[in-house]
Image (cartoon, rainbow, N blue to C red; front, side, top):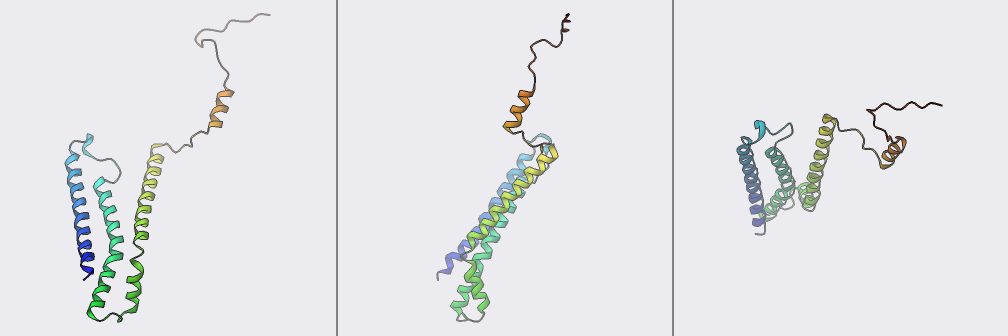
Amino acid sequence: WPDIPVAIAIALSTIIMGSVCWDVHKKHEASKRWRQGGGGGGGPSLSSQVFWQSFWYLMAFYMTWPPYLALQYFWASGREYDNYGFILYAGMVVPLQGVWNFFVYARNRQLKRARETISRSISGLTLPRPTLRATLRRSTLREPTTQNSSSPEPAVSQ
């Protein structure tokens, strides 16, 4: 049976992702007491981020391989052509695992950009950075002062 390795991979990926999430959660909770203020800031915690990233990668895996495994069991039982729509679905999603993984990756990058934008806008750093031309223009518009501003200027008589 060639589908036994697929079933083992499904079970192992679920167990491994669960243990990674649990380990990160334990270490995150243990390190809370050593942080200043005892909190992790205003953003989502590391354990929450790891959980959701693992969840979405597992969903991409589950959308692909369990239908294929079920299709293999249908074919082994002799009912291979009972449900043509399911055969099409299972046959189409196996090659699409890379697409699902890309969606998870792109989602993570978009969330990271959104968090950075929000944190910059909250902290007031949303001002546009000056270009080199604007910086040079400002420096040439300023007149160089050679005298000390604390001493009065001498009166010029004519």
